[in-house]
Length: 209
Image (cartoon, rainbow, N blue to C red; front, side, top):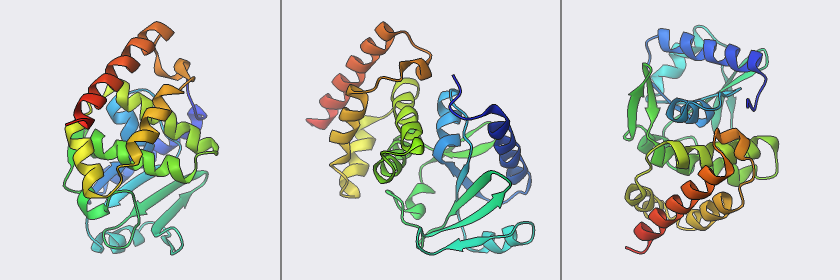
């Protein structure tokens, strides 16, 4: 099942490809990062972290760049698609943009944040918009990451401790324990039940260390 209209997600993907062609350094976070790790649900909007403020000037050549002081990010709007741009030492994410740059890998030619960091970023987003439609998509992405990417829980807990986000783990357990949208996971209820037990067991083991 698709969460967003396929016309919008295809348009968003085309925008991602065009950004990649521009040969500037950025890291994919958000829904597209979750898709690249899980191959499940595409995203409507594009979320990226740039590595240097100079890249903002580079983007201004081709796009109308809007500074959002209240949400501590820059934005580009292309019809119905929003590109949210997060920068070091300005943007407020669950994990600093400067730290995100240290935890990346290449997938399909994109530089993508690693799943442990993405999981925390997704939790931060879900916390801020829990009761919205996007909060629902955040929870689907969170559970999909747990089920389909190999989360290193030792690294996850190390990052939670570093950023004083230890309370995120209780929320994570709550999300997976109460997750009902199994049709979005391409799993049967039994498969999900077994996977859920495995995830909780593995995470509890590392949490107790």
